[in-house]
Image (cartoon, rainbow, N blue to C red; front, side, top):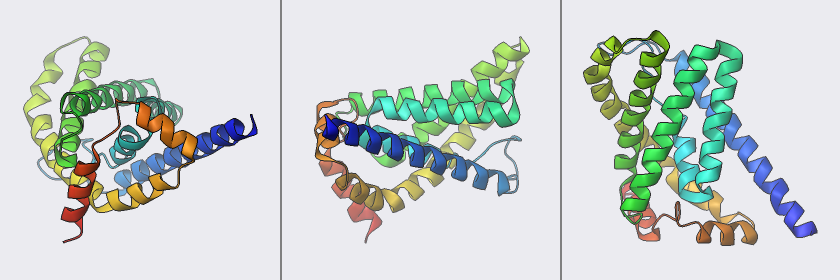
Length: 204
């Protein structure tokens, strides 16, 4: 019983730290000047790195928890519209990345996952915006957001490759009970060979 409580406390603490990290990364994004030739409001999507870590090592429940918590924070500081855009983009992005991991049997590049996540995040926001505005005219932004998704996905994927060795090391510090739970969750148990190959690329 004490061991289970200790594991639950560890899980809650880890999720809290990851949530704080995602908020910090979002704050950093807002400090970056607008990128020329891209639609207003387009961001790097740095906090998506946290979501991907959760998908790879902690499971889908943790990933979607981070998405919802981050959207809730957006609601508190920016209102309902921003909340709806954040939630729709975040949920669709996490869902697509999860499906890609499952469909590829975890044999898929971080870069592909990152690009797919960035593109579908933009798509989710466009869908939410069309409902909020009551018009499909916002879909005219789709080509630009598709291009920006590819660009930002590449940037985020490159950053993820750099920090993945640290994430992998951090994952080794998880309690054994959490590791057993992780291994039994087939929706995020990313293939170890892929991790090894990505780490070799990040450490030439």
